[in-house]
Amino acid sequence: MNKLVVFDCDGTLVDSQHSICTAMVRAFEEAKLTPPERLATLAVVGLSLPVAMARLLPDAESDFHDHLAERYKRAFHALRQENAVSEPLYPGIADLVEELDDAGWLLGVATGKSDRGLTLCLTHHGLFDRFVTLQTADRHPSKPHPSMLQTAMTEAGAMPESTVMIGDTSFDIDMGLAAGARTIGVGWGYHAPDDLAAAGAHAVAMDSRELRGHIGAP
Image 1 (cartoon, rainbow, N blue to C red):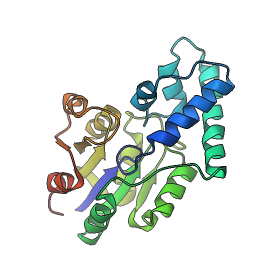
Image 2 (cartoon, rainbow, N blue to C red):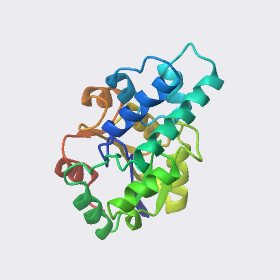
Image 3 (cartoon, rainbow, N blue to C red):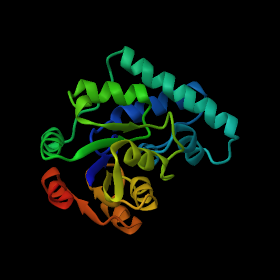
Image 4 (cartoon, rainbow, N blue to C red):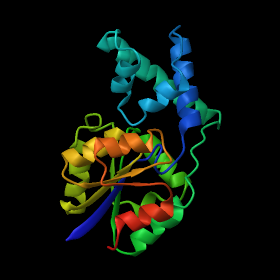
């Protein structure tokens, strides 16, 4: 039976909060709105952009959420053009991905990023070829809907009982549980460890070494 580990990206593999928050501020300012506080922005990381905008502006119409999502995309693209995007890997992640791959785990990503954004990020860090399945918000409903994880399992030929979902938000944990996978939260991202535990994570890791221990043998 194939064993699959699926990672979230932002807040789990890479720390992209500076770029995300900067793009959000630009998007809101261009729309002549007061930007959300940093913690409010981080609280919606991982959701598809229109859903995130709806969380930040619950009284606005859905068309405006879509409009603001497009402004955010343009703002993030502008940051790339300015060579100002910062998405460093968290400590130990590159070694962990390599170790899991070499040990026979199949690896995937399920993220609120776009296809293009995820490809650029993984390629920049030399990790793209380590992953057999990449699922993004471009082709799926927003987390916590299980579509991304279900498709990852299908592409990898893995069953829910042999799949581990790893993420830093309650959205990741909810998605994993909805798909029947084992879930592990990481305490270095954008939701508090207590929130991950409360969401039902089977374990919460505070560093990459602890995460490897929770994943277990292939």
